[in-house]
Image (tube, rainbow, N blue to C red):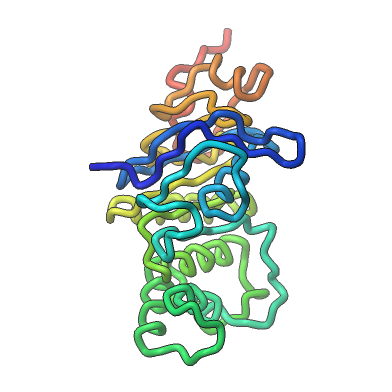
Length: 255
């Protein structure tokens, strides 16, 4: 099937501080990979390196056979919700339409009927077509996140990267977003998402990678307690709140 993403011995440094240390893994086409780890563990830095937004100190990254930053519309990106400006006076439709700009590399132009059809299809895909004319500051956290996913889908990517896609949404929206991502993956989309919330990893994820500056684990989404201890540096108690998960295979019974 081949790999859509290959990372070999990746090191990233900010000044004299090593943020990523000797990270290596592959993401096959059609994979659905969840990367978990603590805040400050390098997850967002990894995404930025894949996107070519930051320089790497050493190592190699190949995205769809190309260097980071040279993949055009092959990679879609959904940034952290908390980093987005929500007071800008634009509509949901206008935001999603900007996802078609990357195909033209033009900032000022008239959107074509094809662009508008693409944006409308993306909004239908994420289930918020009825919100197309709404101002973005009127959206809930879950609606705003779906809009960002729709914008990424408007680029028609081969690989979808998501940074903390459920961090600022309620439980209902979290489940809807994970169901949406599972549907996208089943239709052939390769997905890589990162989160600091271990319990936010959906049961549909094929594999999990644990990252805390270095890659602690990469494999099936059933983690052992010693893996979590190695990642967080302390014993971890996991409590699920209505989200299907496969983090720990067994649980000890209380006496």
